[in-house]
Length: 349
Image (cartoon, rainbow, N blue to C red; front, side, top):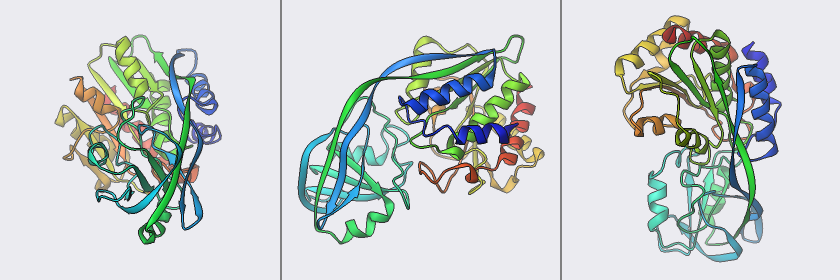
């Protein structure tokens, strides 16, 4: 069933928050979840780019605005140099996860730099946008993002022109919620929106979420919109009040990614993370790819749970096509997703 769900998910389009594809994906997930599920919509002002480009030596490169940076409605130009220098326009090659949480290095440097604008080369063959943790706010100078393969051209150029002209439009997104009577006192949480289709980034978590719901392995299920915009959907749900449960299982990014099996398991209770790691290995997941309680910050929506002092158990994987249009169905190992669902059910029930 997981393979069937994932093929359906992959065909839904690009569920960027607040778009028609987002609404289509939310309705699909509600219907796949069955009679126990419902949509909880919420409003936002989504960013719609009018024109966004970088020009080097007279040749234009397609770009995307960074969604928590201000617009540049008229072309800007000036000397181009490394991000952090005193050049008018700074540039840098950035990993797509460089803005997953507020206050990361790139955000701190944006807030204090002297550049009039910044260009970030992200991903490999195509643009792999950074998230916008401070959305709907903006800060620092305008920032545009280009594909990572433009980095050599940026490095050799000494001057650049760019434009980041966008508007904001009223839109809505939705969380998908479900409650199962007489099931374990657990909330299963996964994000469901992304910059592009991002089948391995989001699909694995959604597949496990649906499988655990089918098994009635938990009493509460929540799939949130707005992941890429500062975890907006979870913040909406927390403002209304999450179910009071003994544990939230966070199904984060890249679960079952075919391109990289590495998996981080974290919990506020280290013994619980070890228990899930053991269950994953027992189910047949490659034990050498699992790290329980790694150092570093808690990522994804689990960051919000940890900040609020709520008990959580989190899984997050890795992905060579993170935030990239190349992250499609072939990048997801559905058999591995099924193993992960088996392990989660064993821990929860």
